[in-house]
Length: 193
Image (cartoon, rainbow, N blue to C red):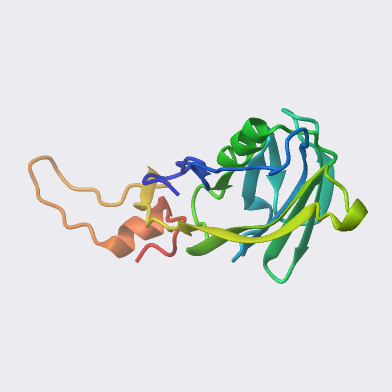
């Protein structure tokens, strides 16, 4: 959350400077799997992968925008596992995809503070497994995004009746209790006291 009532924090790039290689020439990257752990805000937690905004609040599937990869999301116990498949990405396109992953908590007023950990867990290429070949590599490359809740200032917008009535040039004492009794106060982070 950014400072200010109803202010959205910007999406955060999760990785940078990725280096992707199939090792053998002529092969392409066909898939990538990663997990996002520490999820507690349901549909308010999103990632953007390959041009597609993906909500991490429940299981889903679809197709990414930039490279047309199939994706599936499985959410269990606060961790979303995202599987990308069907790719024919060259190394530079795969690097751009990884470096382009962003995370955002879209709860503008009261996101749950804590770490969200994004971990690349597997990459696959088009090399196949014939003759003892290996086309999948297990990974454990992580990045942590710290979500911070910001205490927004309370608001007081309208009065339903006068709080105090006095003659001109006369001092009046107004208590918080009288303001609360007549006002339209709110604090998205808690109670006005």
